[in-house]
Length: 333
Image (cartoon, rainbow, N blue to C red; front, top):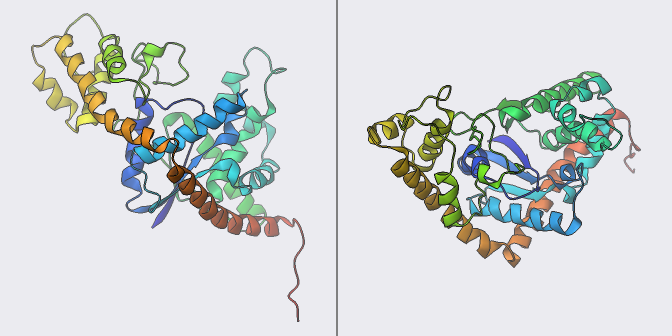
């Protein structure tokens, strides 16, 4: 079984886009792969966080992972800060990273616009930590969105650089970008990806939105004035985005849906999209609320941290030895 790693920041409730583009696929991946699903809370602190809210978000994200179908008997679910090897290897990889390549990261450039005096140095140096997250588990495949591809390329570069300079310690991971439903767009600006950080709450559907809220957001989604249900992302991005959502929620192709709504306006179509989303998210929400404050959730996270620590320490020990860190313990006679 090949190894897959994925990490998500606990910086707010995940969106429908996160579910359809990533989490939904994770459930299938765990059947044939050894999957590590990590709540990367140490990445979250590169931006100011309220400590109590951060802890709530960590627990909420863990409950959502399980509610969508991640099985702790098949996958390892854990919290990044509960596995110290992540920050240790992150520092080691930071020492072989170059300032120039870190400054070229698009996310750093975007978030440091307008001056860097008030920008956390963690925004510059977190890509090596992200690389450590992945490399600790000898990861072979990393499923990511298009916006993370640049960071994964840096991870590959750092793995190869370390292997060439010291010893062949790390597996160089491959990047996997899902195709179907991989990019769910904003409901208000369909040329932009759906984001939980969008200031306009009508632009995204939270995985924990109430059914009536979901229906209302779909009804108010930006489309166009033609009134023709047609899949044409270039010329009709709004309606095409709703078709993608509908398609992934129901398993029906955009072409089949287009034919089904031939000659109909957007009203009935949007109403049906809303119902399809509600039908998908309602059982997830029910399971989420059962788990959120349960002892079961803590036991699963404890077990996950234990398994992750064992695997991570094996790689860290080899990397430290290759770099010349610490002592070499002599065998006793």
